[in-house]
Image (tube, rainbow, N blue to C red; front, side, top):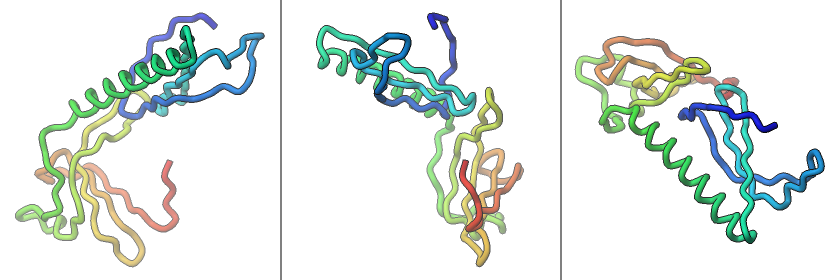
Length: 156
């Protein structure tokens, strides 16, 4: 509707090509090469259309936009992480980490405007659950929370 909108691209944003199959307000979208930016944390999706001299030009321009936005988001996301290596070995004097399958940093969604970088361990599963443990950092001295994953767990 012609309004200018300012958004922040987070690690929880998706950019991808898409198509509109219909007309809206008398506008024929078949002339446009469309891409969308989905902001999962805010529950919003923005659509952008490229019209070129030819269909090939429009397709190439759309591809440049999608690749450039995706590249920028990846670089910003990577900049959030400290230098580290994924670990499968338990830490010294860390009895809890004896059952560690894998550990490393991940980006955690806190709320619509905040994300944290936490150190996470995935532990071997017991007969009824597996466990993720979240720490402040790789020293694993300050446990923040844990999540039990069962056959009834739902990813959302």
